[in-house]
Structure formats: structure tokens, C-alpha cells
Length: 168
Image (cartoon, rainbow, N blue to C red):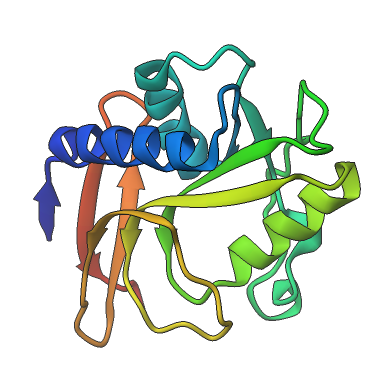
């Protein structure tokens, strides 16, 4: 099992997000974290960016297309978007981008709330192996894992990234 420090990665993501929002002309973007690791990362980025809008969060359990295979999360939490998404620049944050299915589900839920001007995807880790054509705009770190390995964010305090063999 390997544990990695993520503070430097979050600082780099903050700088990249500032540049991306400036390029978009997004003076007041709104941020949404995906439960649960994405919310932890979003809390740190939201604070570092000093965003005015409160942080939103999504639990995409009911939007997943693979719940028949992996089961429904036994601790489903309600989503909370304390702002209007119509014509807004949205920063969507998750901890690990893998197959793309979580992000697809999150975007489906966001569009149930309205039509954003843009969605910028920021992920702490991109581990590749996509099943859907989804790519992040802001990537903290790319990782290639061996077969049978998994990466998981632990937190919320302190945040730590752990690479371990999958449990049998």
C-alpha cells in the first residue's frame, strides 16, 4: 500500500482553475463536488479560489447506469445545489476519474437542475481506462495502476491518497 501527499497537487489545480475561469471570462463560477471524495477535494479548491457561491454537492447514486452491477450505495445522501445552474460556469469536481460513468451520471443530474453555460471538470487523479468518452479539463495527477490495483481518497481530514491492491 502506498500513500501519497496531495497538498502540492491541490495547489497546482487551484492555479490551473484560476487560469481556466479567466480564459472563459467566468467571474463568478459555481462549484459542485461529487459525494464523497469529490466533495472533500471541492471543499479545499472552493476555499483556495475564494468562490462567492456556496459549494454544491451531488450524490449520483440514482443516476448511475451500473448500479445493477455494483449495487446502490447504502448511504445515499441528498444532492444540494444552493444556486441556479442556468447559464452559469460550473466547476465539477471529483477525486478519481476512471471509467467516466460517475461524471456522466453527475452531468445528467446537473442538467436536471438547468442548463449551465459550461462545465469544467476538475479531478484530483486521472487513472485512465475510460469506458465513456469523458476527459477532465483540470487534472491533478495522472496515474497508471497495475491490474488489480485501486486508488482511493481518504478523508476528509487529513486528505490522503492511497494506492492498494483490490480486495478480493
